[in-house]
Length: 108
Image (cartoon, rainbow, N blue to C red):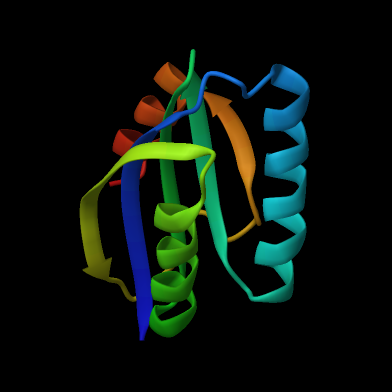
């Protein structure tokens, strides 16, 4: 089952731009090894992310995100079984928030 999950969260105030870049780089590497794709956008410390992949892998990843002390106020926005990936070329890419929204609606 291919699953797409969208969520928002708030990063803790000690997250610097350098730490955020390291977190995204590590996520991209881990995602690639688990065939997880997606996109992340940040505005200040607010995060919006869409991840897609095997349902069990996405559930495990989202459990890890919710338990990650760098994240607070994690809210699941959408969870859907899908037949195709929206972001097949990106193990994790960072976009400005407005570009993420425009991309998400442009491919619906």
